[in-house]
Length: 421
Image 1 (tube, rainbow, N blue to C red):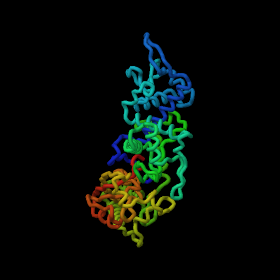
Image 2 (tube, rainbow, N blue to C red):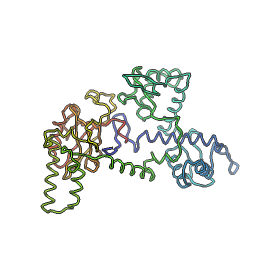
Image 3 (cartoon, rainbow, N blue to C red):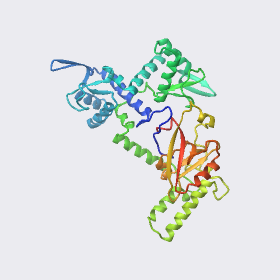
Image 4 (cartoon, one colour):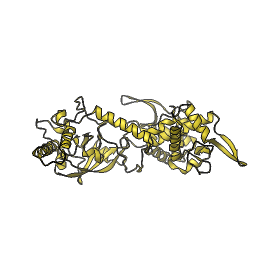
């Protein structure tokens, strides 16, 4: 990945500390664990001091079972994993007096005492799970494969058939209520349009899919991949980022790794803050590279926005699908706006743009100021320093950016599927 991940907020997407996709994965891991513990007869009524606690499990027995069944490789990891489920309101102490401990204490899954309904996101997840189970049955048969525009979409369903099902089951009172529920599910990343181009609509021409594979079995240890503050997840992200840096390089219009912003920045760092003639020479060269990059003058007659490459020299666009200006400005657009302020360094801003009406980010130097500020590939440029540029070509946009020598303020539009990477 060339850019860095950012969490964005938008017109219909609420700001959240983590993406809904990751939270839903944690919910599903917890629910599948609950079912497994029920099958193992570990969830049952228990008595303590003449009082009966219904549908609960003993903390020590829970940790024993998790390690024995290889859900985690140690008791410490099992405790940490269960604490993540507790933080996401999936399980709690029967009197809400303790966090998860490897002791003889009673815990209960919130779905077994209906307290999960106090959490709107968790309540919506369980509603989606029930809908998935209903839509997947052979008698209903709404979820199936569809051929559309030469593409095969598996496990998809039509928007209108989804609405029909909700009305038939009495889940909603009107088609309008069904559309509202569908939009809530889409905004929580529980369902998606097959090409991520439309919000939920009561339309037989639009196909949707559940974002989660509810049938795939999961282990508790997988929560560390999704929990935002998990140390193990942090290690995984570090390894992934290191792998990404090994796989990709950012080349300037000179099409030579020797002159890439990464190499220039590394050479510049070896000079420290020295005012020697060599240091000033590097800064001048770097500033010239930035001006050529942003103005489109590559020094060889090739426009810079067309020469951002990966390690193997490909110039293919990074866009999954080209969006028109009308789509970006539509009230139902899946793209959300975000303001990014980038402070230039001696090399420049560290990104390459491409495209004409609209212009988008083709590449981002992972060690440059744009990446630090949160700029990502596939983002469309809406404005530059307050100037509307959505209908401008990349050369015009590049000149506007070039006018900002020290810093630039961009308003970009990010697709909701990329906003939580």
